[in-house]
Image (cartoon, rainbow, N blue to C red; front, top):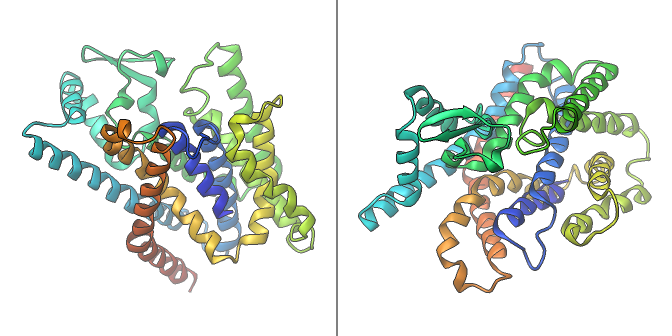
Length: 362
């Protein structure tokens, strides 16, 4: 399943940077929702199998999830700040992003200034910046991020971290939800779908951020991943999921993602979600022992976190590159930087997480 995760991360790059070898691949927002399904699967898996025998207090789980996300995020954030300061020293003036931050945030009330600084460093609440706008320093609520005066999300150093903010909210809920009965999980999924329908249809809020960044409206995707785990657990003791015939339709998922912009069949979004849901338990069953696939999956998070920085860094050179190559260059540099992050940061931290888990099991 590591290849699937990396393809989804590259799809986000394709959305932000432009085509990668002639295709933008899957739309970034859809890719993120598919990520949420995969996250729901893995959280259900580790809570029901890896954390078995540990008391019901969720602090160990929460601590390990924070160790999984924060070190890489803080390193990337540090690199971004260092790069901005270095550029400012070299140019003799603050870069445009710092000037915009100073001018925009400087005119806001102190509590809003503190709020923006905090969410940039802790990720909790990052997604909420898409629900507010600034107009001459006056902050107000907005129902349409795309047409807001100056969205507060403009002041995020890692703007795509909004999805990590939603992940953190899900981690808070996960120990109390994913170990509960299947009917209860389905009930919450249905309530989430009803909330999504009400916002997008009944209350006439079809705009971003309601479809992708409002936690009650995306909780269903995390739960779908948990339901995919129930499929995996139900068939794990048989040969159903490991049979080659079951792997074939799952392998069609990769080309579907890559060539998604060229697919013209009706309801292609729903087909995409259905394919991911059905493929998750199959792919995990076949590749859970593959070190190569595991490594590809480990790259997906740092690739997702760092790619916007390289887009900003390379943007002045975009006109010097062939039109088809900018997204590819950003992807290759992001992958290379992510390999370094995995080897130097993620792997040592992962060993610490495993030791913490083993100590609590003794």
